[in-house]
Length: 595
Image (cartoon, rainbow, N blue to C red; front, side, top):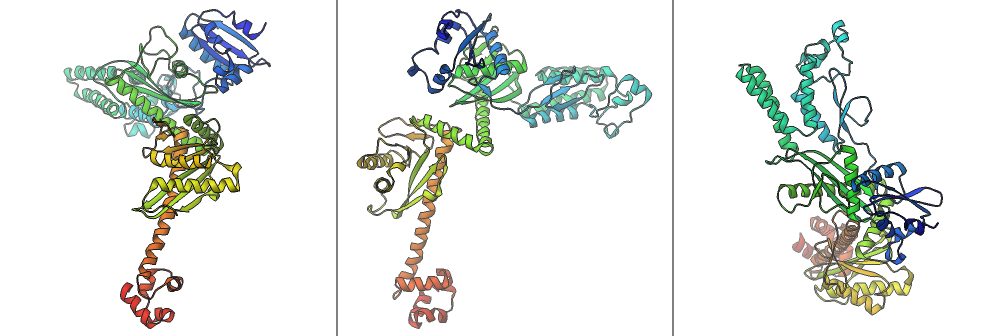
């Protein structure tokens, strides 16, 4: 039975399907509300599929499925199978680092500490935390609010009775109540741990409310010292959470998912809100082996978070609907108010995480980063080939003086400085950026066609708006090479990419590979052009000062500059030394003008 015949028998039920290659390896795992319809979408005419999906389909030798009761069950099963088989063409977590957890040990006097290892030892683990600073901040709060022990001794009734442990410095300075010598009961110490666990679960308001009730009860019994302790703890918690989390006057629970999809990468941010306050956050990156719909990536993200943190809240804030329905969960897309602000915050976190990941990848995996950047730029502009060879042009002049232009060249996504070229504008009079751009583009590629016609770039970037782009396009058309390369303009608002004949600009994500690459080549062209313009202007200014003196010509100017090095040094030199070079009459005249 062929694969097509096999999938024709798949049921119209929710479930998970698996594709195998000829060697029996699982190469893709997917979930579906309707297995039959979903799998049939892969086996359509090849021209209706993108390139990577066509490659996946070409390698499918067998297909199997598992039926489940609901979409939620399908999501969890898909997530587990992906982790088990690590299929080549599935969405995989990009971030391999181990996130920290806060551990509360299973002991008579529990310890509270930070760890990256989760063990099945009866201890309770809370997290993971994407920010180590946030986790350490929580620990600092706990140890400054409650007199917890920080030692690693195994404390039991036997060790206390036998006096086997001597109190440490924390006991003597009041930071610990002395668990090791039985100075605090297991019940009282346990009540502190219960409050800490409640905080870690998101019960900030409940803990503060309970502390305030205990404070009032102690004050009513005239136990003002104990009441003051409760008051200080409540105030410490309020102060910490007012600074470290966003809280709302409304008391509600929800989970927030924000997602950014960029090419074959996705970046997600998760926020857990309990009692109107953000109590947990986590950022994750995903690598897509084939193009996936954002809704499918969001579902994978939700499944990953549910596995890490347990059941979701009854309300889940999302930027768009995932392709899965979960019983008891209402997916909400807010457009205003506090919950919309939470979604915006999540999106900001995802963008920051994206930018950080790109910077890290640029330094740790430069070759992979360059390949992804070129592919993203190709996709963003709509090119058929990778822009392995790119060139960018920039004009530079000040009020029409010293008009120059620069051409920088990138090969393989990096500058090729040996190929940079500088141009003095020859045929244009005054500050006419449009005509200047046409001149240098014509000069650059007419010479290239004469000397090395096979080395034309795949992409030409014009630093300027529609005017400069249109004149550059005219030059390419006059040379007859407009169909052999792609040309775009980069407007002042650098996220706007302009194309010839297209009234609508392309908008690039400022954190994307494509934006960073095209910005790099634009900035390099601007830097190179400005430095060339400054050098010419400096030479002209130097020449004009000396040339304005009667009797100083080009050769005399060069003789003076070679000997003294600069105009200020000529001005500071004694007249007799200048006279040795140009004679006493001209030397006196020079000193009168610049001395």
